[in-house]
Image 1 (cartoon, helix red, strand yellow):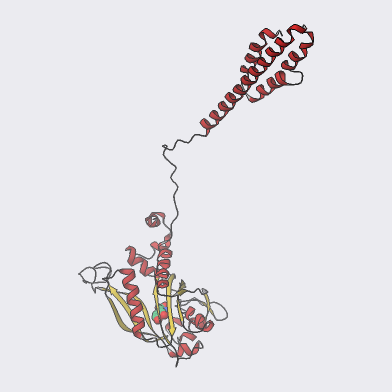
Image 2 (cartoon, rainbow, N blue to C red):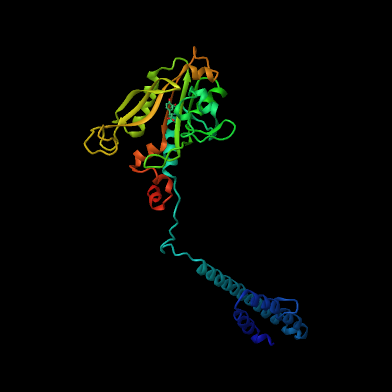
Length: 342
Ligand code: DAH
C-alpha cells in the first residue's frame, strides 16, 4: 500500500465496521504489531535519506487521522447499540395497565381488629386463648354449675378427657387471672363453638370478644363509663345506650347492653326489621365479676373487684354492614366478599 492513498483506505476500512467485533478485527489489522501502521513505519528504511523527514511527518499525520476515525467509529457503534437497547426496553407508560385484583380482609376479621384497636386506646391489651379448652375453665371456674343448660350435650361440643370446644371467650378471663396479678385490663377476641342449627342468625362456629378489667375499687360506674364510651366511639356520638338487668353465672350484678337501632335510629318505627320496632338492639352482656369467680382464679375478692363483658363479632359486623343473614359471612361467595375490598 503506497503511503499516498493509505489514509483514505484505512479510514474507509474503519468506517466499514458494522459492529464491535468487526471493529476489533480492524483494530488489530491497523494498530496491531503487524498492522498497517507498523508496516508503514518499517518502510522508512527504504526511503531515501532526504525524504525520510517528510515521510515521517506524513506517517504521523496519517496515524493521528486514523486514530481519530477509529475513535469516532467506535463511539458511533456504541451509540447505535445503546439506542437499539433503549428502543427495545422502552415502556409506553400511556398503555392501559393490567388489573391486579387485591385481596381484602374478611368483614369478621376487620371488625375484630377494629374492636381491638378501640379498646387498645382505653389501655386494654389483647390476649389469646386456646379453642380447645378444659371444662374447668370453660364452665366450673366461671361459676357455671353442672346443671346449667350450656353444659348439656345438645349445646356444647364435648371432646375427650374433660375438654370442650370453648363455647365462649370467657375462659380467657380465667387463664389471665390465674397467670397474672391485678391490675388486669384485657380484651380477647376469638372463635367459639356451639351446637346450634344453622339459620339466619346462628352458625356452629362464630366469634366473640371478651373484656376484663380487674383492679382495686372498680365499680359498675367504671363498667358503664367504658362501655358507653366504646359504643359511642364505635357507633357514633349520638348512639343511645341502655343497660338492662340480666343474669350470667359469672357476673353479679349482670346486665345486657342495648344501643339505639342502627337502622331506625331508636325511633322504633313500625316495620323496622332490625330492632323489631323496639328502637333498641341488644349488643352485649356484661357485669361485675362474681366474687366466687375471682376466688376460683386466685384473686382476693376482698381487695379487688372488676367488670367483664362479652359480645358476638358477627352480630356487630352484621349491624355495621347491614347483612341480613349470618350465612353470608361463611359462604365465601366472591359476589358477597368483593363488597369489602377497600
Ligand atoms: N360469655 C357470655 C356468652 O357467651 C358473654 C358474656 C356475658 C361475657 C357477660 C361476659 C359477661 O364476660 O360479663 O354469652
